[in-house]
Image (cartoon, helix red, strand yellow):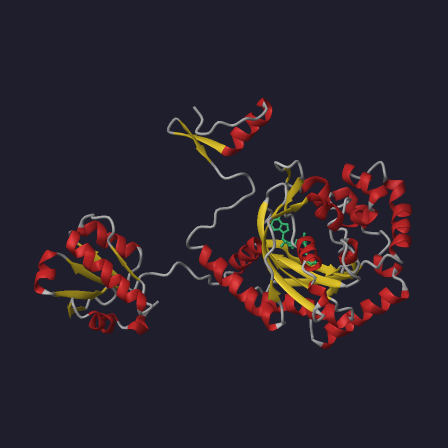
Length: 451
Ligand code: HAM
């Protein structure tokens, strides 16, 4: 018997069962779907710390947080992210809801934020408008190190700032995020992919260049040759990337305006001392980009991966039915940030240990421990106490595992006398305390010793 009744066609079901259940003790155990992660205590603290740093750094640049839905009508992503992108063509989690409307789990944040900006008339207020967000994204990709099917992004979007200095400022924010997270092995790669005016000529040049190789291009790139040859430039397949090495470069095909914009962005970055390389192969995988595009790449040998990607997307707000307001932004994958920080050997925060563990023997002692822990919490002290009724030996073993700084043993005898000892687990020193005097207990464990 399976724990759930699943209606599924038989082949799909066999595959689903293989990936989602494991046989243990004669029972099929449910497992998380491929490409998803459980973030457990011990690691969740590192996430919280990382999120706090991201939020604080972005707020220093004037970004305020928006929260957007996890699913949207599929058309938003088809029109926003673009029909020729891999994300729309093969990676979206799309479903038909009970009203027979096609809905999609958010594969990225920008399209949803743009929809939110238009729907709520946010561009009618003071411009530029600077928004940040934490989102969970879903992409049906092949899971591998740092690549998940469900992952978290932190992103920023700046609307109504057209000047090149805005591009540089957004890139500088990216640089600061990595600095503040202590990620030192990082390189910034930038490029300009032109605008609607110069892109057609560039596409033509790429089409001409790649056409002689069409029999050798991978299947995906063969399709891209007609729909979006720009994407052949960053194909990861060995043969395509060999051909792409000598492909025409976007920066050699920019119109005068795009050329001037890119030069000005570089000059601003130089002025701020931001190190970067111009990489003509950075073309980005989403269709909405124009002009400046960039990626921050982890160069640590233990974890090489793109940590952050972004660029300018003037035209997208209009494309989705809003006013002619420009946009630029980026998103960074938090799962990858954590992996990069681990590779760097950064000290990540761990679960807090209790300052005091109250071992309680018997129901009256448990009640006492319960009220003492409540009092200590009011004083912002984390105290743990026995909630199981297990033996003293087992309780002390638990206190040891949880790395409690002090312990207090309370049984019927101690309660009767109104006295017990607080033991410093590091030094072994025992201090007598009056059990009724909670304030004296705070003094005995020394609030400043809180870890
Ligand atoms: P993206 O390059 O598709 O851009 O994703 C941004 C970041 O999300 C990547 O650099 C990576 O760190 C993380 N990421 C992407 N896919 C995965 C995955 N399968 N598993 C784990 N992490 C992943 C965007 O999403 C754009 N919306 C960024 C943007 C904002 N452009 C302008 N504004």
